[in-house]
Length: 276
Image 1 (tube, rainbow, N blue to C red):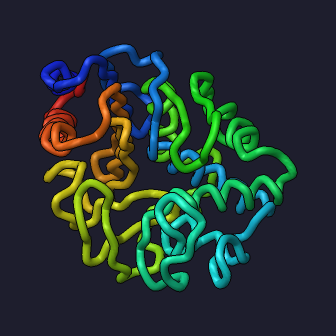
Image 2: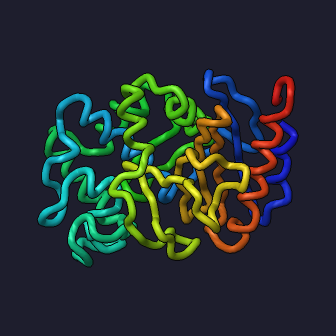
């Protein structure tokens, strides 16, 4: 895809990107797609997918208590537990505000580890990475932010999110729809959103502005970005997913570069004939 060449102008030392179609066919690659990069918060969709598999397996339930008093697994996944950003301190009652929380995902990982009898990183490997052939992905620490992966692996995950095999389509549909509608909150890096709609572990595009995806991105687009300069978006209307990993911390450069890049990718995908 010629649009992927736009990453060559980004102010980063190393960048890898790839696009996959709904049938699992790669539409294009650029850069060292087999190189591992820290994911930062792009770890969360992987952790959330493992949690949803645990729900389908019967190890946990979305409605069962987890985290602070009154909170459930669903609250933790949807950043609605009331926990602070990076410490297990309660800032609000569950379901009252959209408080983006790494601590909530840490609590989720601990909860799943106890329910399954294995470390969360091992559960993630067995439930998600191994079945999808994601051999370059590991979780050496927090399920909120410490994942390491490659574009090649994230494209495999993106294909799964477009056409799930490990989850029932109904489960993924619930996870990528608004959970606890109407909650306000801060979208990290982009400011306060009214509302700040979120799914079960997935950031939802909706009609947020500004946003890290593009103006051409459909409202049904979901995914995540990370402070390590990384993102994964899935646009069901376009029938495509894009993973991009860099070695530069997120900042104004990314907020400026990512949306036009996404728009160029989507424009090329919409052209008649093969995209590649």
